[in-house]
Amino acid sequence: MCGAIWRRSPAHSPPAENRANLLSGQRILVVDDNRTNRRLLELLLAHRGSDSFMAEGGADALVLLRAELATGSTVDATKVIRALPG
Image 1 (cartoon, rainbow, N blue to C red):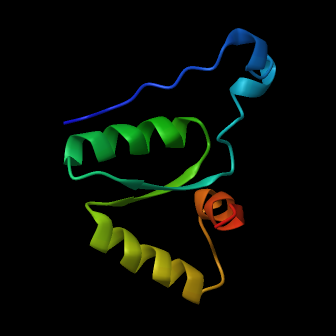
Image 2: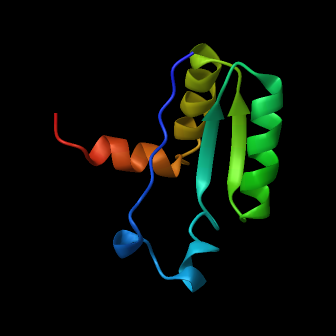
């Protein structure tokens, strides 16, 4: 298993009063093959006020994303990815 930890320096962090609401109202798709990880992230994201949905793997995630796009909805992260050049 390989992982990375990203940390923002304090100079680039949002003010403390804004950090609590950073995920509030965001639609987030979590993809992880570990059920415990998905449940933990679901609880953490709900606590932060985000609307999350879970997929066990890439194939499941694509099914969920296609269903979202068919209804005119989208996931907030895909908005960012689609705006990237290339």
